[in-house]
Length: 376
Image 1 (tube, rainbow, N blue to C red):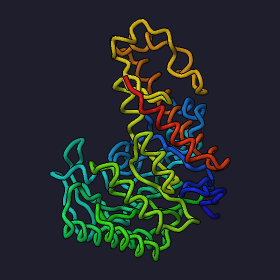
Image 2 (cartoon, rainbow, N blue to C red):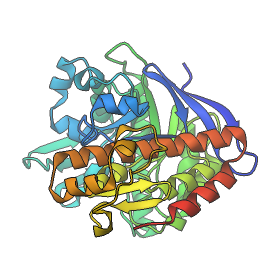
Image 3 (cartoon, rainbow, N blue to C red):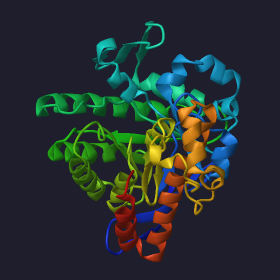
Image 4 (cartoon, rainbow, N blue to C red):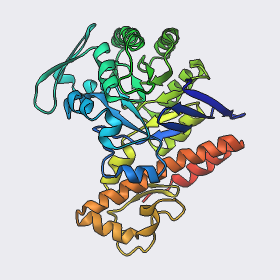
């Protein structure tokens, strides 16, 4: 079973349309994956995600390992059954979460020792154990354990970190190849390119990673505070080197502008907490720019968020009502804002795909970014 099928490439850029073929559904690409770190995309029901045509969501190995734990997930027959989700699931390895626990972790060539952010208990992740945890989760797509290099970092630190991540990647692939799925469906494994902000290190890592022959390839270590243009340049460099017959996943990115710029540079898959986190803070993304619901100017607004989106939240409630919900700290405010933002992100990449197939992507992208530059 081959994971990726390329359907159409743009004549004027590296933008491309394709499909991911998983046993939990065929996923058109480019695709945005809502982040459900602990087995839930915050403030939205799985039913609503399906209605918004989300085909794949993200889970996180670190968080699900700590709570509810592998034994509970196994008891329910895997993460799909535990959370009642019949679409595809990609699980991050937990490397970024361990990176964020800099004062609570120790990295060695064997793996990562860390303290739980919940109770301070000590734990150890090896490349092999992270594969086993994700086998137990039943993820459709498994990510390798890696170290996410902080920004800024010098070249020596980055090179040493890159060597560590590459050795972990080789061990991860070997263990993946020597283990079996637990729940009767095929799982795929992605490598993660590192190399910090140094083009030569990025190039070297990708060239070595391709020899391991993962099912797909991710670009990690970006969107960690570097300027957007630097992220775009390194993404462009990376997609020049990555094979066309496998999916390309830019991890942790990003704003609507980031998505369109990186689709143009050949990226197929994205995830980011931005649409859900910003929704919970009262910020909406639209084709006409950002809306900050707490602004006084929306108090008497009878306008809906966006009646062009096929989304209950987007075209059934006035901005005045939504502002009232936020000012009153009503839970419904978080639900409606989250539903809209996810609907917008999914619609954005769906429109990008349509334009790629029809040969109009670059002109559409320019017009879309011009409109989205507006804001409250």
